[in-house]
Length: 224
Image (cartoon, rainbow, N blue to C red; front, side):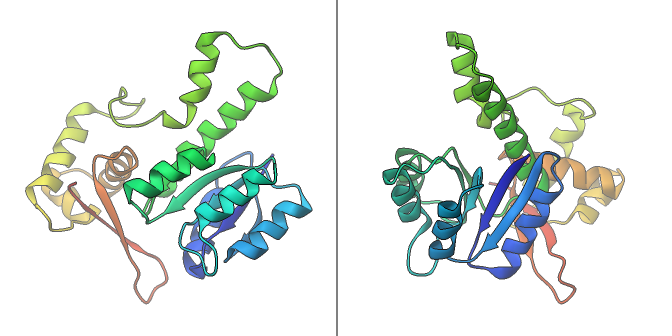
């Protein structure tokens, strides 16, 4: 069981991310905090395997916290989960030792595939076996699986994926919902939602979460 610390200054987003984590077998939410100081304290107490870390935090940025944890030798893994898409920030995250950089907004499926890849990575490293170059290559590439360019997973059709992508692209900068795609593609809403989530998780569409009074975000999609 991997213990995950969720760090985000937005209380509602932190709650959603924690819910996403709790749905992935083998992962447990060890805590939710909203700034760098309690995150650092939680790591100091021990028992944290992975931090889902936002960049924009009060008083200290996520990248600054990452550097501080590395300088002090804390054995904890970090995946940045942030709306900061600046190239300099992505580069700094890599230099500071973050395992991956997941840009907001993302779907539960997008986070799930990264957590599953993380579990695979840790399983490879923790088994104690000496690594040949093939295993090293797989380890370094573990969190980059399920991305654009890979073969379609079981249960998905290239033809349907292309149709959904084309419908979204035809709307230009306008955002569309799963219901609209369902009607235009003449497929069920659940199928449209599944393909839209898959394409967004693989970087082929842009997902925007619109929060309404119900508390549940509406998922809207647009081309890149």
